[in-house]
Image (cartoon, rainbow, N blue to C red; front, side, top):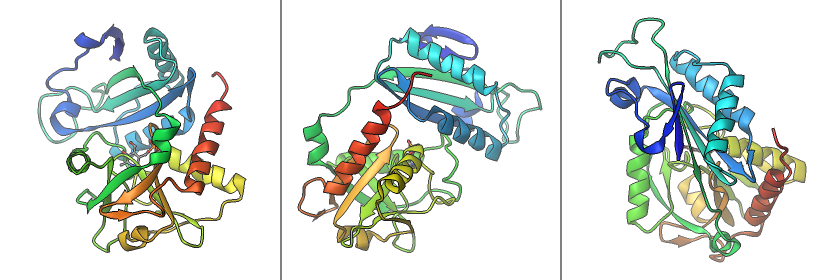
Length: 285
Ligand code: PLP
């Protein structure tokens, strides 16, 4: 495997940043994960839009042009012979003697890119659905920024793992579900309406989330962006999670409560089919 690190392509095992990188010391950086399917990047431009936005919100210098970023992305995919997998890109505020304030102007941001092969789950696996648990949302007030500061997410995901679940849905102080630790959360009400939390500072506005909303509109699915409670989720007809790597993944159990009849819901499966159809239709770029 080959990684890109600050202007160089290096063997993955040797790929390293300096010990005084602010990403390493302070989680002072942002990232994106873009899926590759059949050699094509899924929603590359929206991912780069969000990366640029994250950089802007944290006042980290843009490291290079979007065209350069795209060229490196393609080179990393090519060098790793990725047909189906993902590209990870990370930009930090760079290397400087450890001190909380921003380093002096002109300190170059660090840029790292890696790619890996991923095998897609079988249809059976998708139809079986996954279990989620609920946890308290203990994160900060800028969850809209995709930073590498992921400790609450990591603790939550580990808690899910240890409970035999795939994801943990984070619940705010009002009892409303914000999102998963690395996915957005969705329910389909008993009335058949698709519901997901609005994209405020409380959640990461998933690129997959945005694509699903677009597909729902095109397919004439009734949907609404509003907060929903854990209680409502427990009595929902269907539920699913979404992300660049999980696409649309049906949820069949929340804590000890079975969702619907315990099988993936029909609208959830349709949403997944539409999403897969969208990916199949992507052009080489
Ligand atoms: N929410 C959180 C907290 C995430 O970390 C992610 C992705 O990693 C998502 C939602 C889903 O975002 P996307 O669809 O852009 O992958």
